[in-house]
Amino acid sequence: MLTTINKAWNWIGVKAKEIMQTNDFGNIIFKSTKKEISQAKMNQELKTRLVDAVDRAIEKNN
Image (cartoon, rainbow, N blue to C red; front, side, top):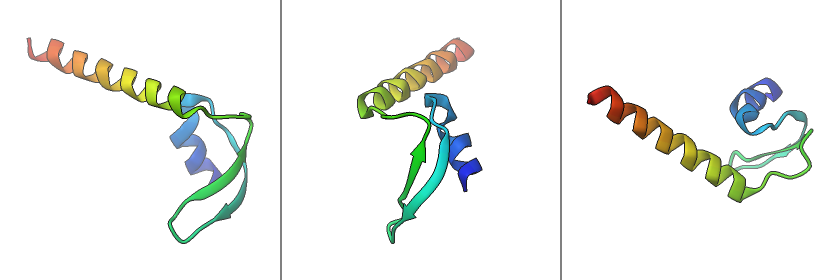
């Protein structure tokens, strides 16, 4: 499971070290090498990636 988490969150610099717990909703709480993950930073990164993907699609179709 650590490998899956690390593959999914590597883009923001998260490396899971230990699974702390899971719950019935499928959430996973884990310790990472990064002290804090800012939701704003994640949102900005996702927005940037989306805009870049749209720009590439537009360029490809022109």
